[in-house]
Image (tube, rainbow, N blue to C red; front, side):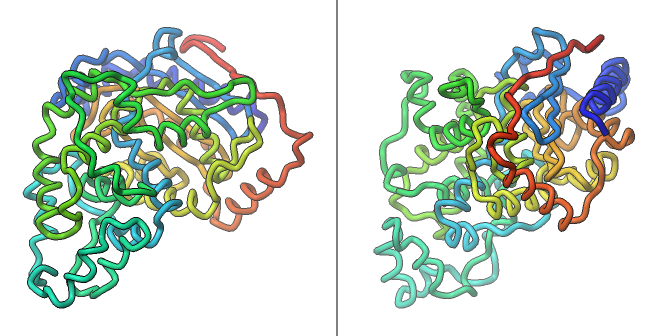
Length: 415
């Protein structure tokens, strides 16, 4: 199908959802996340969509104001942390975090999450002869894995990188040098955005390289200081989780718990608009290839693994319900700031931003947009073989064949 025809179908889908926004909100009882003050204050009327079909062209829909609005990516950051951990410490990540479905809600209480840690198997600390030598070397980056290879029977993995305790462990595994977690935490009431940016720098750098165009020296991505502060004020649940993980030897005592929490929170506070998110999504749809800069940002096998994970876990316990209406062809990750990042491997990507969340913690308007696009068959179901062949063809395209990067923008009323 020609690009112009696909864009027209996306525009029609956007308009249909735009016209039904009020009905969708009432039906799903959707509202902004209220457990983080900064998110509760977001404009609930924001609705914008970005789409790409694997090339350098992207379509952006929504009012000019909404297109330019930045939101924090929240749990969408967990997907990119997973990519970094798989690149930097794949064995450690696989030892700490599984890739399984879970029935946990997006804001599950620490007592529910930590129940997975309170297992019948004894603690490693109960067996000092087996654990002591490994504990001494746990914070050494080259030997961190030693601790977990001693005896498989004494450890249960976190369910996946999307649930909070799995995501926190993924942040730990993403660091080439864990000694940064021994540094004192920031004073959130006496810090700057630049300080918070530094905490999230690895994820910011990855996102920037994915969203960058050949005309930019660097994609301008940063954190939102006020969201960072707001989230830390209500982070007791995650604080308890980290203490549970240290109690059960999932994390070494040398880790400064508040520093780790701040790094995790800074990632969630990364601030992006729909254009930036759509460009990053285009790179993911091309299995790590940024077609604008002609650079391979991430190894295809790592992207494939992370995409398969979010396909089954990306919307928490609402994942199956989402796929029932949005189709099995999409790999999606949601965030409580209102973002749904959808990747159609080898075909393209769809990104939506709309803050009101349904009972599962996912954007109600965003899910409706994915459903409408699925009904119009804009993206086709493909076998894994077909997806890999398509993506490989995109990656092997001669550089002379790359089109000049361009952005196709439209309001919600016309193209």
